Image 1: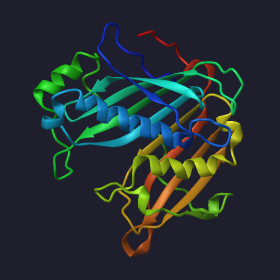
Image 2: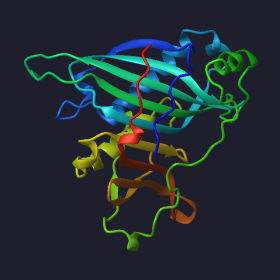
Image 3: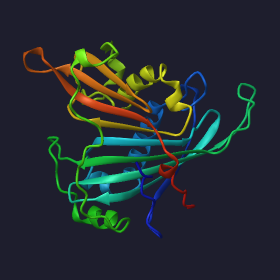
Length: 275
């Protein structure tokens, strides 16, 4: 497990600032994984709106998100998001987002904290208005290509996609209840809502999030309104594995998403390049 690749020297990037809100944090005032996912959606929307590509390449879906919490971000704070392309092919890209935070104090959180740092990478697929993978336009491809020397990006899963048999795991399956507010206008489960289920699970695995850690979520099948989610979990030393299961043909459970949360070893922490 190595660090996420840094930005190419001299490469352009998009930068924007946000505020950490109380709705973003847990009871220890730590920014949650689902809040990080919302920041990533916001910076992606703000990035494309700052260009002309909202007309030519407006539709993208996320296949995977990697979140490296190196130094946690907490409330109150201002967050700076820097976004650039780390690798690409003609139909998909790895978009890197670096979140840094200058922490503040108030009467509810009087402790001084080190600056926050969360490194992320998301595998985005360009799709047409029918949801099918589509070639990135030449203009956008040229712009993205200037940010990276990796122009032959291939998909390779980072999580085990086959769920174990329930008889082979110690933890019993549990149901995660979805709400109508978890779905977007296209009746797809919002990316952040998946990670709310992960946060529910991490309450029982505090040792993983009290140190630098990596969360990887891979989206395999869409989840639509009315579909129940069953969570299957396995704890392996310094790693938690989760499979989000939904009814498939003949009501047999199939994997909709996979999740891993692992302790980051020192060699995976990397170095921060200044803007």
